[in-house]
Image (cartoon, rainbow, N blue to C red; front, side, top):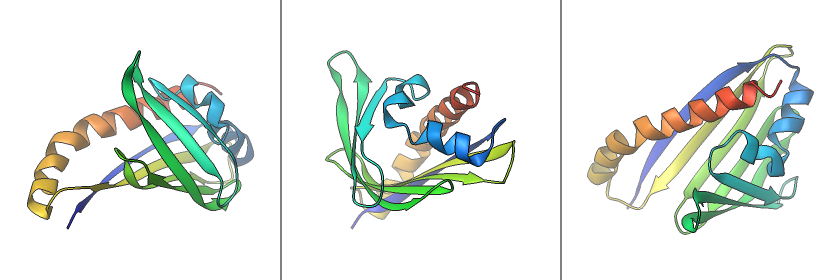
Length: 142
């Protein structure tokens, strides 16, 4: 029995939802705003997305399948890899400019509930910091 860790971050972007959507869903450009990550993939429900996070030879592959695709508002991916499992949600709110770009990760931890809570206390601060830093970099693209 596992536990879930939810990590949420958002940023106000000085652009409209269509422009934010195009930039966020351009997987190959995510390396410009998500530190130490390279992403490739398709678009639309059922498409696969593959990310690699790491420095030099040390890192991991994050495989995903798009389970919800609602341009220019929401993309949900299901992480299917060995290291990262769970759902990731990219959501654009507002008719802007500006609009809000939200990123939610609902990670399945392969730990019993009590250990999952402890792991969450250790992992969440760094993960939230990382998502927020990435989103601040994203907003600076506009």
